[in-house]
Length: 388
Length: 95
Image (cartoon, rainbow over all chains, first blue to last red; front, side):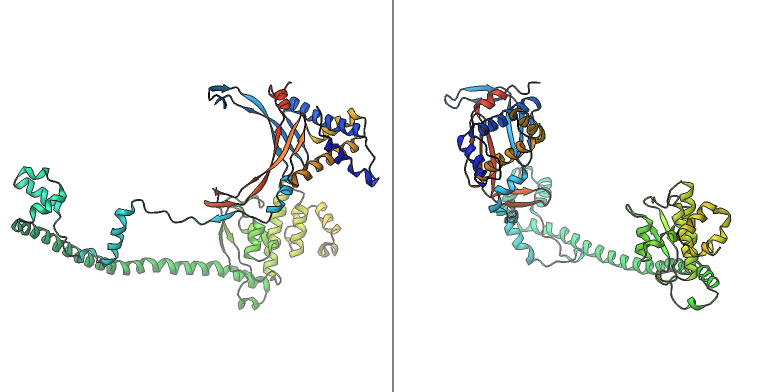
């Protein structure tokens, strides 16, 4: 194997800078030869040679196929064989395509598809707009159709009409007006029947509408009022609790920051995000967990389709009322309890958060909190514990 | 085979350091790509030749957009193995 001599000169070029060690031509020749030989060896051994930022050489199997001798045209079978395939690295492709780098694929506006049978359809579409839209029950009776005439008469009179084509029938019947008139009468009767049915249908519809509307109102009204009552019922005890917690009636006038509601869990929901969405503060998520412990066992896992109750938030996140703080402390305590049962290391932090929201939680659940956890709280500078 | 292995073996056979072998290999690649950029064809006798070909702009169909697209022209690099290399490797992998 011998490499191009021009190549060696190029590789050797930086020698002028004196920074790189100079290489003799023989050495460079052997370097190129060895490199190429190694690529070949690699192909034979692995079937693949990947050279970083240059490309991949690969042996690819091509199946046996039939072809022709290009000189004689004689058919022959080309046996299956391996081929050397080279795929340039993306970096090289980019370098080679700098000239076209500013170009992007463009969407080509395709012309609308031509109608399938233009000769037959175009005249029809031109005619259609001329006919104004008439309600079906007001339409005049259709003129007698030649098809039907042919059938009726063929049955009544002579059988030889059957052999005549439809298009030719008009000419056949033109000289016999009497038969045409006789046929028009039943058709007209049909038309008047249609008109009669139409008006009857209209009246029926109107009557039905009249009947249905009062029923609907009657049906809808009671549940609506019930719902209002239910909502009031839901709100009343809550606000009562709020008042009791406050000890004053100040919050009675201000509307709650979040009035409460329900939420059906969608894929990807979690309590943190729901709290952020509804309460505008993700840290209030235990408030939702507190009310939904029956539905949600693990606060970190929600199942799609679960219906969650969203409790009321009386004050905005930056001005929580004492009732909110108590609820949140309760929620964080529930989370703490769950985490402790499932041996999650986050448990003491949940308790810490609960105490931060409402220190009284320590008194209400004093028997459930161990000395270790109290020590943890003390280590994390909780004032309520430090004073104890 | 990867670049690392290639460099290791090169260093072994030529009695040079791996860093040096890697540097030389990179410079060899660089000369090839520079020639290709200027539109030349690079021939390595006994191994094969590298070259570029301009692919003209063409119409295509983007199945995701369901739209017909006009793709811009681009330069495609190709490698043509020499007859010797083809003959040597037509039997496939040896191992």
